[in-house]
Image (cartoon, rainbow over all chains, first blue to last red; front, side, top):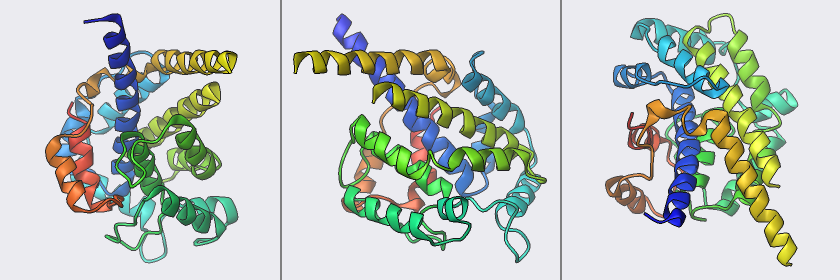
Length: 203
Length: 68
């Protein structure tokens, strides 16, 4: 294989890993992992980078009973009729209330980028899982706009994630009921820090 | 213009090197095989029309991408 081909493969691999991490975090924060998902998580192996160690920790944390995990998810994100310990919405973190201007701004960007809401639940689109899934979609080209370049990804990241997701992950890591989600939160925090630094590097 | 382009290429290389060192390749070795989605998944999305955000795709997307 040519050196150019190797280079292209290396680039594709990094972008694919970024996309996969966004997809993974989006999935874990959208609904409790099922047994098959937990089984796959247990097989994750990281190296000695902070990101790699966070993945290894997640693999260990995935060794958990389904019932325990479902309880944890409910306490963290739904609560018992009065909301969970964590409100994972951009609008809440940025303004203190739900459905405020950050959600309106997100909807404008979604429209521009050809992103539609699936309407499969009642969650507003500025839920962290939806935003992570949108980043994934922008990288792999799932949306009307197709594969987006780095400047579009940077714009979306800075506008809708950089301003609050780090705070959310710190809160989640420290939340009273968090056990499995301590590892999820740490992975999310470290990955988004890496992404933020990388975006700034390319700006 | 030429200089600008050279600058952008350098920045892109810096970013990639940074991501590599941050563990975006070896650090996620357990998630080997995470590449583009299969044709099957793409076909499903094509049916869903061009405006693609579907939360119902969560699980499918995850399994397609994270083939550990």
